[in-house]
Image 1 (tube, rainbow, N blue to C red):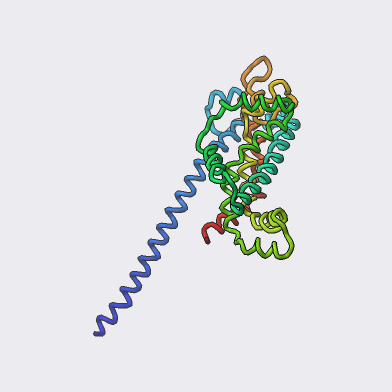
Image 2 (cartoon, one colour):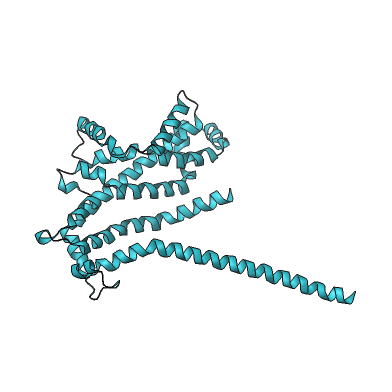
Amino acid sequence: MSTLHAAAPKTVEQTARSVKSKKLLSRTLLWIFLLLVAAFALFPIILAFFGSLKTNLELTTGTTMLPKEWKFGNYLQAWNTANFARFTWNSVFISVFTTLGTLLVGTMAAYAVARVDFIGKKLYVMIQSCTLFISIGAVVLRPQFDLMVALGLQKSLWGVIIILISAHATAFFMLIGFVRAVPRELDEAAFIDGCNFYSVYFRVILPLLTPALGVTALWTFRGAWNEYILPLVFTMTQPALQTLTVGLAGLKYGIGDAAQPQLMLAGACLSMLPMIVVYIFANKSFMQMTAGSVKG
């Protein structure tokens, strides 16, 4: 009996050690996996940054990863050559108003579909789904341009903004789930306090959608910032209205039509900075949204 009692604690202790070792192993493997993913994601950015600090000859020959002579003047040359101040303002203008318009239209559509039964509701949701899963790309560029010509917006950035806002299906489906998660009892309580359908939307629904709005704004801003085809089509005859994505193409060739890839890399690194700033501000909302979805 004494032998059995003496052996029992050892078995429990061995089991506890085994469990701890398994947890440590799984955590180590998880960190290794995450570090590998981060390395694969950051490696192209690191290469672009180092390439932007090289000379043209050193970059094209590709002898070393680190530059032999750090050419920080490439950034100043890229800024002046590509008129970055003007192009950055145009990109910010398009991205900000596209984000605000998409959030407004997306939340209104999600609120109406989630709270109101109307004729054609299922058809509307189906059409929104089709715009997500059926990509027709450049096929619609001509009709979109003709529509903006009819509205007199073919030489304005507002034409690009309106078209980008119309592609709000992703924001709609991201937001409608959160609107449906808001209890209807809150709507009823607001109606009792004297609110109408529209004031419930502004005073009850929108404040409760703050985390979802932050994430949706981040995705919308990124999409508008990286948009290339639409600004290219609408600004072909208006160089002063070009965005960063379009203006960066002008850095491909420098003096005497010589290829200048180091300037393009410097310009690309500069164009990343606003997105990093936006992500820093929207990161808190993203984490709140993720934590809430896991908890639910």
